[in-house]
Length: 271
Image (spheres, rainbow, N blue to C red):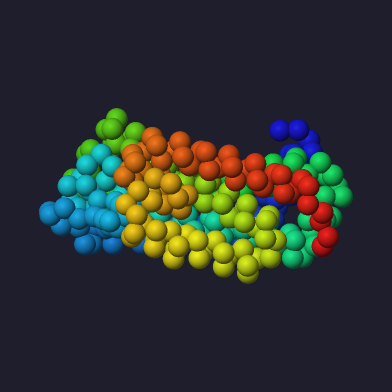
């Protein structure tokens, strides 16, 4: 990372390190993980149970699932499914607010090579989000051990090689999914500039439109970005499988980056 890019990186991190941002964003990530873990152990039964069973982000949380090697992170995975939309909003707010407050023009004066400016902002946002997922996973695992002790759920499988691999995979899947959500929000913010319009368009696409398509077309989760990101985050990948979902997500991420870079570089900054 060169000096100009690192300068943009540090400037974005300085903005993200504000107490309200730290408390709000990290608090939400940790809160979802702790709440989802607690509820999973409270309602888990011997019979098979699946959250979002008809969705690409389906996650099993029966007692058999919780005692297995991936049991420690079941709640974290459940919570991460909700956090993706928060990441989308955070990226969108970070970019669109620069337009609204006129600070993007000032930043462009200090760094006229806009792609370096954009790269520094994206890198800072990705690091910030990855730290949040790490905190959320640690909180979820600690909650899982406490809940397992109260409910008498065996936990020896959690510390085996397979258990540690499941923990690492859950974190990797969540971060990959989160980055995809963030880049989607960033592209919309760069294209639309105004935060209310950006959020309205993105939330309408992710929820009503993609849900309607999924209900009417069985293969929708193999093609639409929001559904693919749900599959990646859950570790299953949806109906097309994890590998295909990751490849398609990477393709979409490349397209989001390319479109964002092109617009960011060529469009005049008028505010």
